[in-house]
Length: 158
Image (cartoon, rainbow, N blue to C red):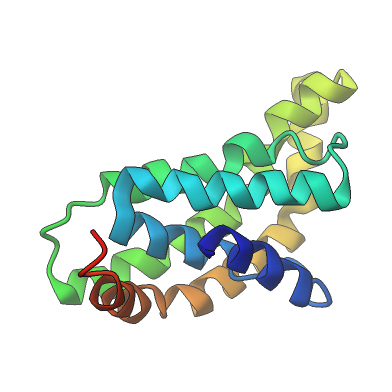
């Protein structure tokens, strides 16, 4: 259900450039389910491929969201509530800001870009990454309350 929610939220929000719930939902799932968060994450990735085509844009999805999952896994579980209110949105924001940079290695390989070409591609995408970062920060403010809610909802399941 969470993977389908991620996919549907992306479709619904496509009118907004680089603003979506995926970063926030990835972090919420990771905070609550830890390693099991990879299940909805990769369901989201596979659904994107099924419905939009397993085209060249899709391949970086196989690792870009895993980076956010991995960084979230590295956040200490015993962090204070006050620190979580700052760290969660900051991590989500940084992922949005670095999205183009994370995408760049695949672009370089797929299109034969040299180092200068790759840097130029990253720089050209910075305005879009800035929008992505702003959206991720705003939505990242919901990570803590939503993860607390999801923990309560799923307490009897785990």
